[in-house]
Length: 63
Image 1 (cartoon, rainbow, N blue to C red):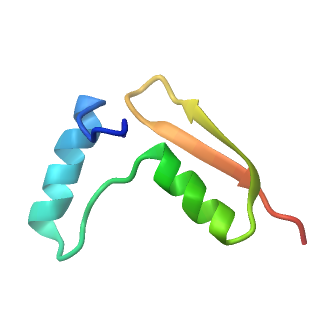
Image 2: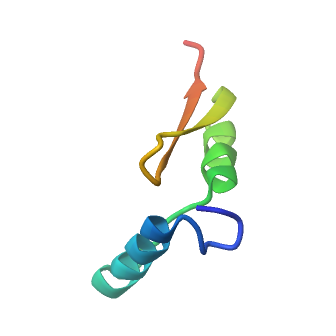
């Protein structure tokens, strides 16, 4: 999701579906995911567009 949570359209509709169908459902921005990964010791985060309206956030954790 972009920072405004309005794009991509698939993500925005999925977020709405999660909010309707689950008590705490939502989608997250790449920055939020990267922040949570960093909090748990991951480094070298990279966000990759899948070309299908979604993105993949990867990181590395030593150990």
